[in-house]
Length: 363
Image 1 (cartoon, one colour):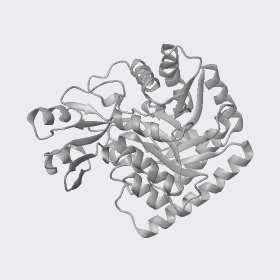
Image 2: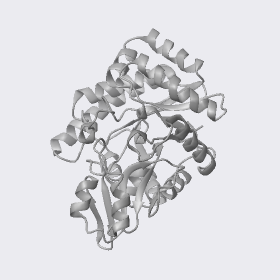
Image 3: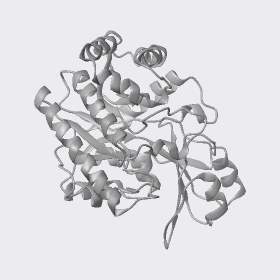
Image 4: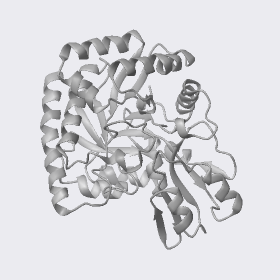
């Protein structure tokens, strides 16, 4: 099965999460005519804390999920708080991995996930941010983040011992962050972390924006002794000729105030960067193709002259090991131009993923 990520649903508490699952996830499962639907669950920090402290509540939540035909083998623990504020932008990167709140949240998520894993799951995964936004960041911050991950690893080992199946952290490189690219993440993690418990989350939108080759990226992760713990199946927006009036007008429709939409331009001299679309319009030469960090639905071809990078997604999934967790993460439905019914859209994405991604990849 391929999961879909529930960070697209705003829900401040456990009751709200169940309402959203009834409103959307159950409808998706029914539309797919499936007995079960895999979720990449997002829990706001207060919800994760409450569940981690109450074993009875965890068992009750597991039963609520099962009664709806829903399973959970992976959590998205990148967003900590409200991911649906009017303006999120850089706030999504807080707290950083130098802040004790990030460690506590992730430990809580591990405790919750360990009790939610279906019997068929060989492991559980938790994706997290690439340490922090790139500024400010110092060598001392490197040390503090490494210490936090070492402490987390002790908790992950304890959960593995308690349940007999590993819970693994997946660090997710993202443009503009301390770990901007897969190469950055590999260089930072290798030698600092226990690869049995900490590896890479390969977000294929982020990978595409960096203009990296998918197969080479996966090979570099393996060569460093690390694993792709989780793939976030996502597609970036691409415009071949951003300097034309038609190209600029088309991509401008995706400039919106809630989320950060980093832009990269692939020039013969190297990849140029802008931290958001408004900045890109002002600072990039727009003489070569742009890729934009805007998660576009996998099944929906953007209007010409735009395209999406689903080819990068397909190649990346083909390169990872069978059994790697795959989570469809299109969190941008609420800001997507012309978006229709959410449950219908998610079901269409999952159908596309089932048809186009290599079999044997499961959550």
